[in-house]
Image 1 (spheres, rainbow, N blue to C red):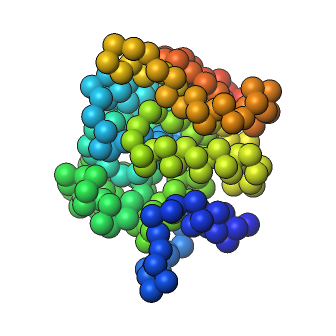
Image 2: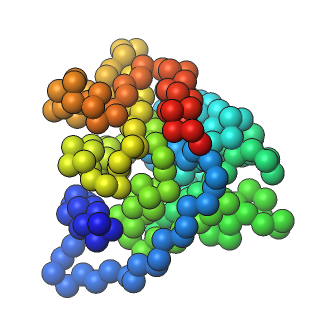
Amino acid sequence: TASELKRILERTYQHRFSSTHSEPQSMPFPEEKSGRFNVAVFCSAGARNDTLNQDAYHLGAFLGEHDFGLVFGAGDREMMGSTYRGMLSKRTGQSGWIGASSVDHILEVEADNPKQFKLGRTANNPLGPDQYYNAATIYDRMEYMIRTAHAFAVIPGGAGTLQEMAVLLLLKQQRHPSMQNKDIVLLNEIEINGHKVAFYQPFLDMIPPNQRQQLGIHICTSMDQLEQRLLQLRNTNNR
């Protein structure tokens, strides 16, 4: 069903394609070999929110300290960069693993040091990811994240994060095999101008509460709650 997943992702990303547009050749996806419970974190590398940056750093450090795998979009700015730096602060030879993927032109925008990601983790590049997939397109990047993850954590972000969230929910509602036994954990609460806002509520309102539970969609109002839910999911998954 890999071709079906790619078709869904292609149709969902509406910024593509003119009739004359051609896409680069996709590379084969690498084998998932972290040996850990991998969490794909979807968040923004462009939207600025100091509180969410702190939350994202806390999440990355939590994943590293508790020996999770982090799968993310290979950016070192804003929330995406905060998650990455949090994981790096706790990753050792025995704890933590990072899988990253991006598209060349997007990596140039979302990372101050693109080469650090593309080279991967080596003795000469200790801050690189343990695995890097050079995606040909934005939907190849998301497919890598879906394939490599065992669960998904979604933080409030910008337009790109909203789009990714919509794809995850679509695949969940379709009960696509790529999402089988993979839960989505949402940080749904954000403070804007002193008011707490349920950020993803318009998406969630389209799914009845009983169906959310059946589909494995968990709604959290704090980062601590989200992290505890990830621990519970890993314990259930026995990884």
